[in-house]
Every structure is written in C-alpha cells, then in structure tokens.
Amino acid sequence: MVYKRTIYWLNTTFGCGAVAVDQDGVVYKWDTCPLYQKVFGEQRFWGKLDQLKRTKKMIGMVKLEIEKDPF
Image (cartoon, rainbow, N blue to C red; front, top):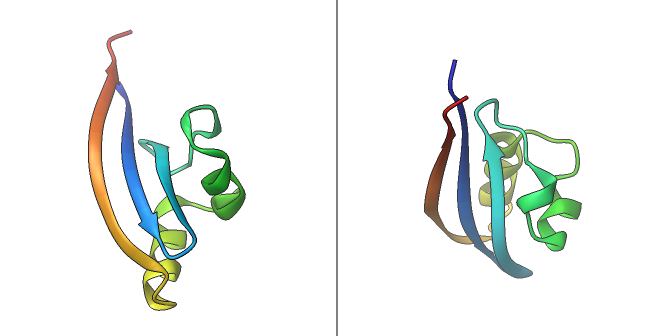
C-alpha cells in the first residue's frame, strides 16, 4: 500500500492557507497552516469542506501537490 498525501490551498472569507490531507481524508496538522488546524480540528476534510461551501465561506481551492511515500 502506498501512502499518499495531498496538499490544497484554500481561500475562504476568513483567510487562506495550505491544508495537507492524507489518503483517508484526515487533515495532517504538521503541514497545515494554524488557521485551518483550528477550523478542521478532528473533522474529516471533505465533510468540513462541504460545510464551508454550504455556508458560503469558501471562495476557492487549488490542489498544489500529491506526495507519495515509496516505503
């Protein structure tokens, strides 16, 4: 099994920054900006992202990179 992590750049009405998400949808706090560490907390990335879209706080999102661990 290959471990995969995706890094997104989020732009919301209250700030912008990078969010690292592992293959299970969990936000990886060590590579996520402090603002979004607080926003996402222990929640899954896609669930919280849908909530941001429903409340019209989401402006945009860009996928920056996909990292794969070969071990």
